[in-house]
Amino acid sequence: MIAITSKDDEELKRAGAVIRAGGLVAFPTETVYGLGGNALDADASRRIYAAKGRPSDNPLIVHISDFSQVYMLAETVPETAKKLADAFWPGPLTMILPKSELVPETTTGGLFTVALRMPNHPAALGLIEQAGVPIAAPSANRSGRPSPTTAAHVYEDMNGKIPIILDGGEVEIGVESTIVDLTGEKPMVLRPGYISREMLQEVLGTGVELDPAIRIRPETVQAGGFATDAAAKPENRAASETCKSDSDATNKSPDGPAENEESDVKRTQNLRPRAPGMRYRHYAPKAPMILVQGPATAVTAYIQKQIEEHKDEKIGVLCSVQTAHAYPNACRVVVAGAFGDLAAVAHNLYADLRDFDEEDIDRIYAEDLGISEDANLKEALENRMMKAAGGHIVTVE
Ligand code: TXA
Ligand code: MG
Image (cartoon, protein in one colour):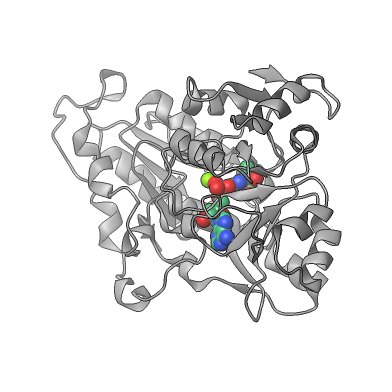
């Protein structure tokens, strides 16, 4: 791990040379850490897929440091792309455009479009400049794990697989960039992020849609690839002594989530998310997570009841500052931020999910922390929490 403090850091030269030579370097961005390789080199992209354990039909985002590179990488550059770049680049926005011949299909997972983003972080921009090539970079986690927001998270997932991790400290935003597809008739957000649809609409002066398929709960999606929930069920784990207050550690399956789940399989059968990565179970802590939605008092009461009823299990709770005191009997309580402070919740979310792994928790109940009057980050948090929960949602009244 190498600490980087500025865009001119000497170490960036060495890291840039590694990328140019076909190697991989993990680096910080303002959203999450990325695992970078030369975007124009099919072998480098293959190495990225291998290091992440990622299916190779899931395309990579190509990172650039100067708008002129868009003309090199995209076949056509619409006016909308220029407007959005003016407003939001460098920043947490990825645009999908038709790809040029220069971009190998291995980088784009076989698609004829390419995802482009100019990150707003001195180490990322310095690395791209030093490499002298655009950098393909997915989030630097092992496939399916929460995205890394510190260099230590990258080390956890990538130790031994890559030669260099550039350490720029904790990231600023904490959830991945907004992805907007500009290849269709209307701009469409394929993955919500810090740049909300309202912000895009304001700049473009037109409506911006949200890919309807991303609201599907992951286990109802037909495309293969995500882990089945059976593999992650608590009956496969033994409750450890530290949190057990009941010696009767029988094998119980989570009963809550199924109860109130309406089946939306039929309604969504033909909808597939247009960003391939959104089809997979994702952002997941090791223990199954159940997202509890409803009025705050009812949510707290439901989680308290679950803790009481499952004394033989190590229960974790992801909650707000305001409700943290309500779960004295939980094995681990992780406070994500104050209710309504979505920036704080987004900033902490992935580190919080990793926190539960340290304790070897059997199951996690998460309060619905994406609720706010403020539209910014709302769709992003709804999406990430639903995916972290693998679609397990309980609605209480
Ligand atoms: O904030 C971010 O975007 C971070 C940092 C490192 O820049 N990167 C990131 O990359 O989140 P990754 O690979 O974890 O997610 C990329 C997403 C995937 O869901 C992928 O399917 C989608 O972008 N994607 C990439 N190229 C695409 C394309 N041509 N069409 C549709 N979706 C695409
Ligand atoms: Mg990712």
